[in-house]
Amino acid sequence: MYLDLAIDFAQEDVKGYAEIMVIVASADGTLVKEELAIIEALMGRCMMHPEMRVNIRNSLEKPPSLELVISKLNPVVLKIALRDAILVAAVDGEYDDSELKVIKTLAKAAGVRKKELSALFEWVKTGWEWHNESFQHLGLV
Image (cartoon, rainbow, N blue to C red; front, top):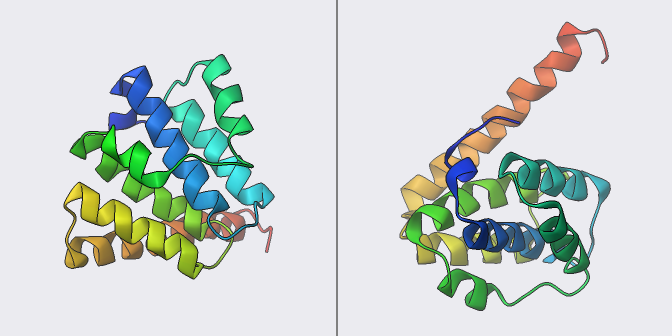
């Protein structure tokens, strides 16, 4: 995973960020291995403390309230969480309506307009295509 602004988040912001990833992944009522894998990768990218990771994993079955988590985070953290929430929602190959509802709520809270949100969805689509090209280069598909 790449490094970005998330590496400089305070630990409380990291916790809220990870909780948002859990909320998105569990929004459709089904957790798949791809969602769990990306959440683990994103927690690692944030340099999340191992004990905090255990707490986040434990919240997968009963995620916290989105509104409560959002209320504790600043706009920068919300914007990064929005971007990565789209990644989490896309990892299983489709966007569920319940995931999209969470994403739209995040976008509103972060002050992200519809045009910017559309650009983020396009960025994710392009990113997955770019990533999947590596399999072709390696002769794996």
